[in-house]
Amino acid sequence: MTLDTVQYLLGALSGGVVGFTLGLVGGGGSILAVPLMVYLVGVASPHVAIGTSALAVAANAASGLAQHARAGTVKWRCGFLYASSGVVGALAGSTLGKAIDGQKLLFLFALLMLVVGALMLRGRHNSGVEGAACNRQNAPTVLGYGLGTGGFSGFFGIGGGFLIVPGLIASTRMPILNAVGTSLVAVTAFGLTTALSYAASGLVDWRLAAIFIVGGVFGGMVGTRAARRLSSRGGLTMIFAILIFTVAAYMLVRSAGALLPGVAHWTGS
Image (cartoon, rainbow, N blue to C red):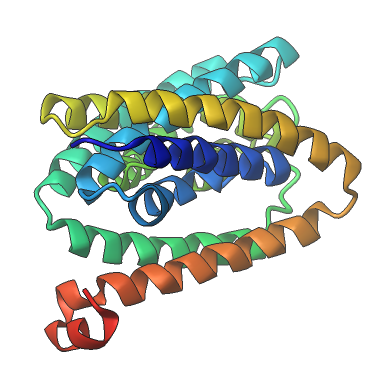
């Protein structure tokens, strides 16, 4: 696949949008990576878009993990335990995702986006338990949640932080701040697993991924600064959830022809 200069510039812009939203509302922004690559950048293959975005998401998550590690908010034992089973799920999910028709995969991705929007509107109000940790009692639960969220992450090529954070809270009862930092261990692992699986099949555009990552770094800096100045994070989350619903609706219309041939005529697909 060969992209022109304008498409690479749009790739940098898309990375900036994802990084900005991650910095602004603290999660969920990576789910915009695939639709931006397909519908804005113009990546022809949905599978290449998924493989490339998985690599970009992993890199951005690793950067965020380093910041949380310096702040001491990462519970490493829980993170590695969660990621260990999640990698198995991500490998299985990515293998299954590559076997599904690209447009059908986008349709399912849009349905997932609707779920993400609903979860973001619901909010996270669980304060957690200080000092919560992974032990023999909760290890099976942690591994189970990791396997499930890893499967979703690999199948759709997303970071999955919006699922991992509540999964960590539910399985360990750790505070939200620790769950956010710890989740990045799994996001990084899931993203790399998915990206390597897709790369082995020649479904990663390395140059686009690098440009997307650079855009994401700058966008994240701007988003983080903006978040510090804005008081209503709840309002920001609602706005972002509405954006997700809008993008999901657009994707459903564009990809509907893959599942409903009769719709192809008026969708132009």
